[in-house]
Image 1 (cartoon, rainbow, N blue to C red):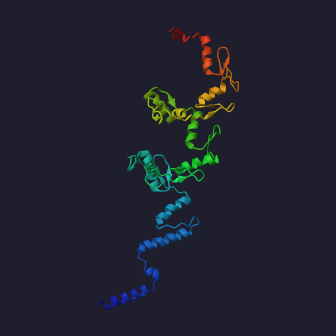
Image 2: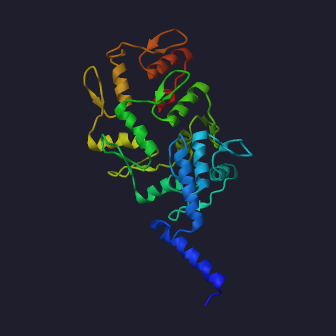
Image 3: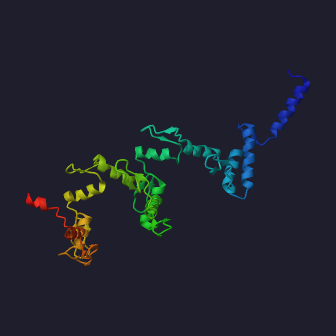
Length: 312
C-alpha cells in the first residue's frame, strides 16, 4: 500500500487521464515528436507561400529559403552561395576533386550519389534503362535533357542562339562549338605535329593519322576505317544504295563528293550552273575544278611532275 498523500495524488492523475480525448490516450508517439509536428504544421499553414507541411521545424526553415531566396552557405574558394549546407559540401568536391562514390560494375568514381545524380544516370549505361520516352515517335532516352533536345526535331524549336550571327541551335554544346568559329579559338593541340583544333573530338580523330588506328569495321568484308562516316560511305558498296541525288537530272551517287563534282563539271563547264570558282592568280583564267587549275598553273611555273615518270 502507498502512503495516504501518494495514493491521493495517483487518484487525481488517473482522473485527469480519463478526460483526455480518445485519440490522445492511444497516441504512442513520443511527446517531443508530437509537439514538434503540431507546431510546424500550424506554422506552415499560416504562411502565405505554399502551405506545405513538414515533420520538423528545421526542415520547414530549409524549405522557406526557396521562397525567400536566402543562401546562407558560401564557398570560400569561388564565392558561390547555396541554400543548404549539403549542397555546399557537394560543390566543394569540384575544387577538391573528391569522388567518394563508385560504380559497383565498372569502378568509375563520382562526386554525388542520389536519384538525380551523375552516378544514377551512369548506371543506366549498364542496365540499358531509358526511362524518358518521346510521345510522338517512341524514341527513348537515358536523360530527360536529351528528350527535351530531341523534341526540338518535332517542334523545330532551337533554344540556343549565337549572339554574333543569330544562328540557332538545339543544344548548348553545339552553340559552344559554333562560337569558336567567331573567336578562332583552337585550344586542343596535337602533341606530335603541333596542329591545333577547336574541338577535342576532332583532335581524337586526327590522332588516328599518327597511330593508324581504324576502330570502325565493315561487317560484310572486314575492311576497317578511321572514321565512322567513311564506313557509312563504304557500306553503300554492299547495299547498292546511292543516297545523293542530283536535283537537276536525277543521277544518283554513293558519295556526296561525287555529286558535287557532277554538279560542277561537264566538258570543262559546270553542267547546270556554269560556275567556275577557281581562278588563276597569274592570268585570271577561271576553272570549274581545282585540279584543272593546278594543271594550268604549271604553265606558268614550268613544273613537269610527270616528265620523269613518262620517260620510265
